[in-house]
Image 1 (cartoon, rainbow, N blue to C red):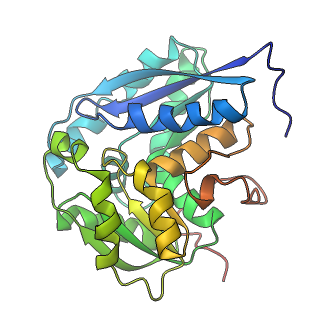
Image 2 (cartoon, one colour; image 1 turned 120 degrees about the vertical axis):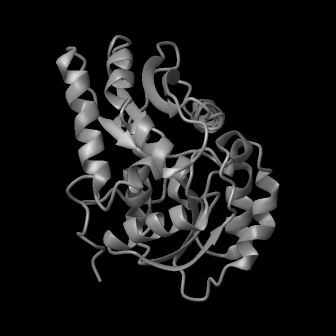
Length: 275
């Protein structure tokens, strides 16, 4: 894949739809893509956000936040982004298996209605795509959610054909408190999981829970691929922009060594992963 000449950088405008209390999506994602700029200075990434009110990760507040999606998409349409990423994984997964397809389609339709067609990525769909790209059939997962919501995430992933062999819920209901969790603690948390049958580890199934600093160290220690909702979203964004999905020090998924899937990057619900 050919990058652009250094003296004429190409600007890539990325629209983000984030919960109002999210502090992490707008830090980890730019951090990853700005690291990529160091290796590929011909590309520059610019970020534009629209926020939806949500303070506590409860089913009621998640439903209320989802009702604001069209308004957020219309605001981003005015910036003419090259790609739009919807950031709250559990808000989509709590609506039932496969909902990321409908959610992404609704955002894309709102963008088109304003003459701003752009590919749409959700962190929920991106996580499934990242797992599939790694060829993982069995995963373990860490979430900051209460156990009830973690169960919905597990059901969602398993509906897509991936077995969740173990899951750890940190049980933090306040979304701002999730953002304040120390990513260094993940270097210990992962050891509480049974990874004997796992092909990959999802270190954070939530873009609000900071994990980027722990991704590569835990991958090195665990000896299996480690990804997060955030690294999977970066992977999909780069794919949609037609760029090599490579970010140094962000785990195997963003190593640049994962072959592009045949027929496109999308994972459809209930399709499973080839055995």
